[in-house]
Image (cartoon, rainbow, N blue to C red; front, side, top):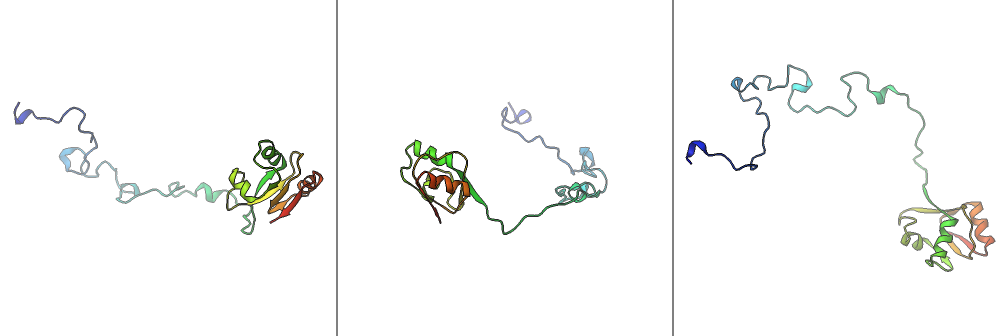
Length: 150
């Protein structure tokens, strides 16, 4: 072994990038393999999302419609059959309030809860929520329970 035949250990080097822009003798000098002119050949070029080479982009060509109501209030819907399931599983016995919804992951702590009328309720429950549908309120009261609006 001598200085002329030293080489790094097998697998210790990983860099196999082209060394561009290091003179004509390298074969990658001059334009540094970027071709000639145009935005792509410049340093600092990054294509904008949706850019189509100056052609009118798709998101500007298609017509817009509808609108988003900024005052819309979103409610997390919970059906009566979900409440009945809580009773069947022994999670609640007589009262269902917001903390129960959060603990059972039916709602998040920042959401507003609306009780919906799907399914049937066989148990007398005192249900506290932000809103009730007419059918849900009627079903809760028909079972002998109470619907309390928060």
